[in-house]
Structures are given as C-alpha cells and as structure tokens.
Length: 382
Image 1 (cartoon, rainbow, N blue to C red):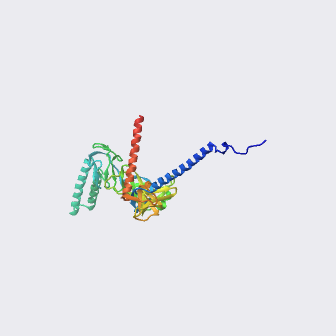
Image 2: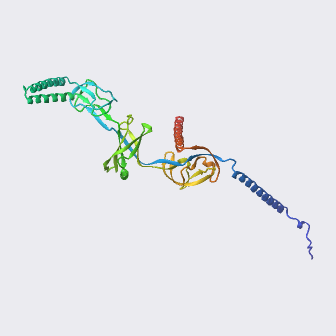
Image 3: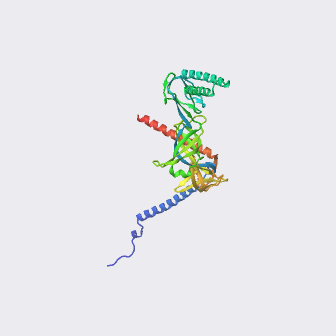
C-alpha cells in the first residue's frame, strides 16, 4: 500500500478566519495610531493659551491688626439718682420736663411752702432787729445769735420744699403730678449723668494678667449696629467671682450725643495689642491641606505661586506672617483661570479697603438673599 506525499491544492491555502483576524489587527493598529495623533494635536492646541487670563489684583500693604478679648457688657450711668422728697407735702409745681438736661442745683420740683416761707420771713425780721440792736449796744450778742439760728433753720425747712438736681444730668420719666402728696422716699423722677457712660463687663480669670487700666476698648450695640463706640478701662475689680471664675471690669465711653442709655447690652472688644503687619484679602488665599499659598503677578504679567504663613484675621483680610513682601501684586479674582508660570492681564487693581468693602457687601447680599428665600419658602408652604 502506498501513500501520495504530494500536497493537495486545498492544503496550501490560508484559512479565511485567520485572514479576518489579521485584517482587524491591522485596522486596530492604524486606528490607535491615528487616535493618538489626533489627541496629541488637541492637547498641543490646549496647552497654548490663546490670550492671557484677565485678573484682579491688590497690593500687599501694612494694615493695623488688633489682638482682642471678647466680652459682653452693660451700660451704666456715670452718676444716677432717684429724686425723692424728705418731707410729707403736696407738689406745688414741676419745673422741668422729662428728657431735659439740667445742671446741678436746678429746681426740679417745688412743694407747698407757704408756712415755711412765713416762718422764714418772721425769723429774718427778728434777726435783723437783734442785729441792729447789738450794733447800737442795746441788745446782747447771744440774743442775736439765737435769732440767726432760727433764721437758718427756717431756711433749711424752706429748702426741703425745693428739690434740686444733685448733678448735671438728664431727667427721666416722672412718677407724680402737681397736687400729689409725696412722703419721704417717694420717687418723683430720676436723673442720670450719661456722658461719659460706664460700661461694666466680666472677663475670664485667665486674662487677668493681660488687663490694665487705660487699655482701649471698642463696643457695639444692636441699637446702633453700624457704629463703634470707643473707650478705655479705668478700673478692675479687686476680686474674682468664685462662681463664674471671672473678674469685673469697668470702662468709660464718651457719649456726647446721649446715644447710649443705661442698661444697653453691648459687645466689647478689649484691645490687648495693636500692631501693623502685611495683609491680603481673604479671597487671595489658596489652601491645600495645611499649605496656604497665593498667586503673585510680576511686572511682566507672569504668575508665580508663593507659599505663605497666615496670622490674625480681620473681617475681609488676613495677616501675612511670611512669604510676601510689601508691594507684591496678589491675585484676588481670576485664580481659577490661571496657574503657576502662566501669563495674565491685570484689568483692575483694588486696595485692601475696597476688597474688604466688596466682600462685606457680598456677604450682606448673601444674607439678604437667604432671608428672602426663607420667607418665600415659608409663604409657599403656607
């Protein structure tokens, strides 16, 4: 039996499925190469900015910072008194109006005094007679002195019917009317000396070593939300309250217009230390974990990222302890459109005060919008 070793025609052909696989591989390689080429071209176009980004900058300048202690205080009169009677008598006249400023010695109320006035007139005439006789050696000095004493007593009794202001101050609301019978201790009205005004507040005992007479304070009240009242500490209590572990402090605040009233609640800032330091607006700070940085623009419009160390914060700006020098141009708007090494165009330069004002205005607007949204939501729900 013999075998034919000559290959047949069909065995020399490549299977069709292999050809299909090879074709697909070639197509894939060509497609991948083309895709990579297209992406390189695209990224190359993206990497080359068409125009420099527009940014807003501010100059780094020294700003006054204040290290403070917070407290809550209550306004008190510099001097305050209840106007009362020392005798039982009927009110004859009221000579001042409520809210009027009066000086020391001003007669506020007069009580009925006809009897006392008559007694004084008689005592005065008696004294004058005895005094004249004594000068002519027709009367004794002792009798004259007795007459003088009676006259002084009559004056004192009459003066008790005239109630006067014990110091300069503002008259409060009166509690009586003409014709009312008052007795010793009856409160007729009040008087308050409110310039300067006293401000009492408590400070935790841990700050005792930082307190001293003469330290400056700043105070605010809801009655005048946009105004700051300045004063200074003039006395510190000798004792610490064992219940609250705080010490009472009293300051005086100038109040020439009488805006502050006794009893007002006030927020107090005690100025521990005031100093100047470089500062930038808060919006200039970029944070990444513990790292703080800012974008600085040089004279050619080139951007560089600089790490900074920050310190105290005030509304709208922050202290720069290190990392910047005075006069550096720091980007405060447009940071997201640029980066380290990029070129930018400065379209506006703001002072720190302008940046702070803009930030505060924006914050106020946000609060108003939030209140409006809450009101609208409430009305919709109702």
